[in-house]
Length: 507
Image 1: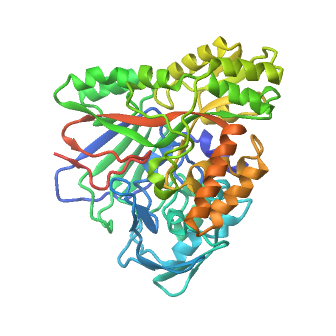
Image 2: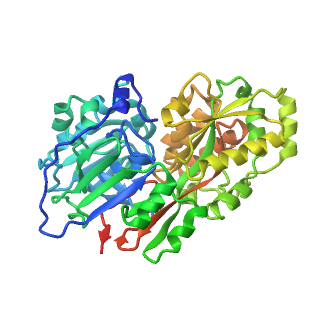
Image 3: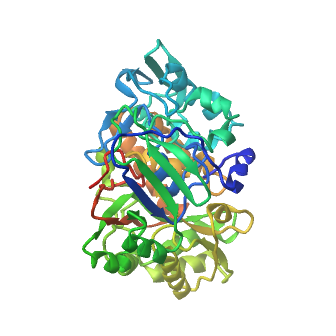
């Protein structure tokens, strides 16, 4: 979901936007890095925009109270809060780090933290940020300042993931005065003020240009200029990398590794990330109302053939909507997804499927080799007698446009290693318009409110069972994200959709 209220749609049509940002002299040779993406964000407030371009850019503009060690063991780490303690099952007290400054030079205050979680941004149903906040922060009841440095966060339930929520998307801390001076979401999204390692220097339809924040509490970045450049065509990204116009390019499929690996100044980095590639159903479509049809569509897909042909076996096929990073909640014994075209035909016949075409919306390359995947899947569906109306669209808004929906390509990013932020975030009550299951919601609330690990695991397994029997989506495989990079750029991607340049260097 990019924007959740009509007023924020104005941002999507915004043309060139220039941001007034201070120019900072670092007393050292300028080190500029250009990152080429197939799409750049159209605004820069995390509560309005949650797609890969937003994750890749805004991770470097904002900080959260706590963070996750994505590159290491997945542990929760201090960020804007230097320490925290559990008061009880519903309450956490956090101590703010001293000396943190916003990009405008003003100090971080407890008032800014309270505002970032308050009604104007998060809890008012009329707020443009409400929809995104509900996916990650719905259980947070109140956030209040105990004193100048102490923040008390209370959940509406006994919350096993309260610390994780404070690291999740949508929990970024913003400058209250800057948000209000900008007139709210629309203005702030064009000229954001955060505490991250980079501030916004300029913002156009074709590029987001960031500059290193000299007063960053985590240390001034080595890269002085970080530009995300729009380059929709893969061929243009690769040629730009070879020529030296780009330092990093995103979303290189395995069949295009050759030109990069053959150049001694270039290399491929990346791998599997915490995202699950899916095909999502809209059960408002009459054909897809019957779960037997949706199950049949899943049984007709040979996932291994797709992984081997398009990903060179570099991504995996999960057994359920889960990842090993879930730790004790992960169930390695769940059965693998079957490829059974004969069973698919049987289910279609039982459902009375009469050959009506099901709309299937795809973009060309939003999720790796997306178009090639779609073409293979359509051929597999044709083999069991299913007709599709494949529609190539340009953007996420067109993907979601109703009526006319049926199926669409998608990814379920798991930005925080807990099923609350994977399966539950992607298919909770906020999605009931396109798919609903009351039993699923019942177990989701157990997962959300139980402090008993065994009870949470039972609830999660019930939810995965329901996902398979009344599917809201087809799971294809885990996502792989591979980057082409110049060797003089010292940057290690993390197993996440985020791109983090806090510690990157150019040598």
